[in-house]
Image (cartoon, rainbow, N blue to C red):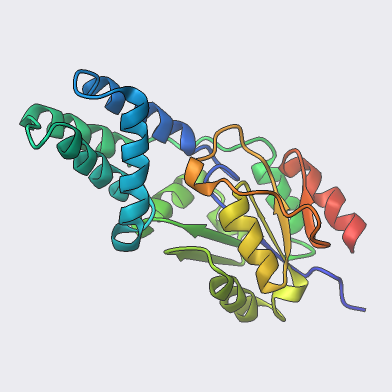
Length: 233
């Protein structure tokens, strides 16, 4: 008899390893650089507007974030941005592309516990080179049955991936910290969606939890995932 769930998709950033903390640190430095030109709350709003506007062109990730910081800095200074500030923005962007990988609690043990009974996939979005670097440095790469680095997470993307590796989304589960990217489109594709909250989440990724959906679940951390799967299966 087939299990209810056969395939587990796991998000990477802020689900398996820390990521948003580096964006927050860089954003704080960015605010300090431009503190003499604009109120910090206004600067934060303008940066988010630039990031959102540029997603279609640059996608997700550090490189897109760096370009959005430069664009925002030009806007708030009225084009009077010094080369020194541009260089500092580029420098902190480079630092973000080389930050060390720190696994979140239960990341490795959870994946290891799943591999004997489930097909386990890494499904992450962002810059290809940066995501490949982080996966390599995490030491988790060999544990996955498949790795999918995508430009965005949509219903069509989840349908394609789960059809490729399994019998379809209806026998799959997606697990991640973002309701907007990891959970809601996966549910709409027909899979299960499990939210693992993280203390830091980019405001763009905020969404209301689909608490009435019969396939939505939330766990405190990855350590509770195996027990949840045992209940469902």
